[in-house]
Image (cartoon, rainbow, N blue to C red; front, side, top):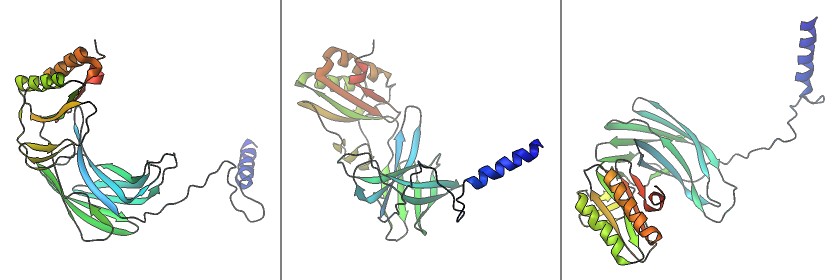
Length: 273
């Protein structure tokens, strides 16, 4: 008897979800239909190596050629891997509605995982069309070769990889002396001129042995960007920045990043005991 009552209850609940006249499913009152936004713009493809504290993560960056307002829009899709072949499917755009006046491309980030030196095939599918790209990974760089098409473009064919002993950043101060003392201290502790080939390293760009672009901006009257090779343990640099931060407080700013995952900021270190 209990089994019969249970079955009858299930049938009533099941068919109760449908209208009697045409048997269509009745949607909940709070149902919100999410519109489908097709990808109707060209896609730019790029690659970079995100340097973290204990590892490096190779990521693929996809951006739309068109920009959208407000910022925060995304390209929705998926990625899968079989050996040295990646299958990437881009499905639609998720246009942000969070407000704001800034216009930016829609973006998607895909982690590529561990990649030994060698060639990798990227098979990218958009709107039913597949475009293939060949990615060559070496100790020094990532290099793209793309099948001729009118859907996908490459931001830059080659991105150079940052050696682990590279440090870069900026030192600035309200008066001229503090930041200069810091840069002199870097040299004393073992910082040496960089020996990097010309090209784009994403975090900075090298033009020649004595010319580079730090991709940053100064906020104080006096300052200088720096790019060095530094072999010793960078804990001594952290302590150096901490000493300058406590001595000069808000009248100095030092930001240092490194190929081993260093991220030292005077504004943070000055609050440490």
